[in-house]
Image 1: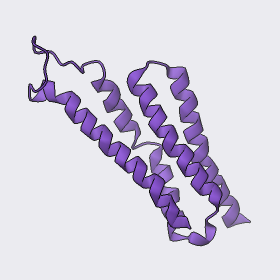
Image 2 (image 1 turned 180 degrees about the vertical axis):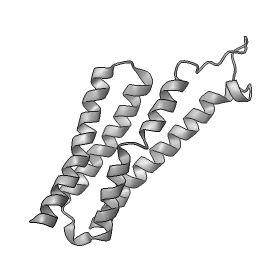
Image 3 (image 1 turned 30 degrees about the horizontal axis):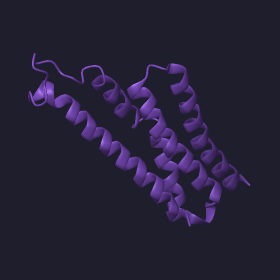
Length: 134
C-alpha cells in the first residue's frame, strides 16, 4: 500500500516539469526574441519572476515531503492511509499555492495555503514519529 505514495510524488514532479516549461516559454522573448512584443519587450515580464520564484519554492519544503514518502515506501510496515491523505493535501496545496503566487499578490492567502501544506507534511512526520516511538 505504501507504493500508493508514488502517485502524489509523480503529480508533484509533473507539476514542477510544467513550471520549467512555462518558465522557458516566458523567458523565450528575452533570450531568443521569440514571442516578443512589436517593441521588443517581453509580454511575460511581470509573470516571469513569479514563476521563477514559485519554481524555486518547489525545492524547499517539498524536500521533506519526498523524504518521508521515500521512507514510507522503503518501510511499508509503517504505512497508514492517513499518509496518503496528507500527501494528496500537500500536492493539491502546492498546485493552488503556485496559482496564487503566480497570478496574485495575495501574500495572506499564499501564507494560509502554505500553512496547509506545512501541516500536511508535518502530520506525516508526526504520525511516523508516533509509529516508531510507540
